[in-house]
Image (cartoon, rainbow, N blue to C red; front, side, top):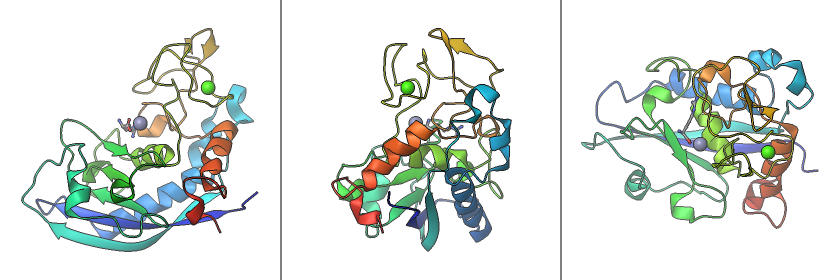
Length: 237
Ligand code: ARG
Ligand code: ZN
Ligand code: CA
């Protein structure tokens, strides 16, 4: 048991217009959302249906803002090929979570690299209007949950439906198998694969206001990356 793990975060804002050059308040709001969500201090955790209530986890991972870098660029859409990371390389990726805030384009909210990949591209990329919960944000992805979801991937969590059909696994036992992503704000219960989907899990594709939990099984999976032999051992105390 490693206890509470605190991860320093460097935010790199790459903007092509003043709107994309998001405020410090917007950055602070995202750090606050991550801390609430990963520590089960989010007020909407209490919306969890009783079927899943005992599974809602405090992952004992928290975040501190270690720095903000701002760069003006003529690039208006960065895509998902890590070009932004090549242009603005990460700060100390072994010990720091790097988040690039830039317009990805193509309707993509964000993307992440799973643990164990190249250091030069380690971290999370997110669009400025899907980052934080105040300022330049776009409903229904205006509650900071895109970063919660992407940091889930960064800590080795898969999508709740295992990126496949009913027999595809997310390698987490307490998340029921599902047929595919859920969108919008599904009513409870949503049943697929003869079980209730955990549509309120951060690793589904629902709206920000309709996702509000990690499970105990996800907690255990994500914490193994910090073990002494794990890919993010350098972040453990
Ligand atoms: N499409 C992105 C991904 O698969 C992010 C989805 C985030 N969803 C949200 N409600 N903010 O990584
Ligand atoms: Zn995802
Ligand atoms: Ca599962």
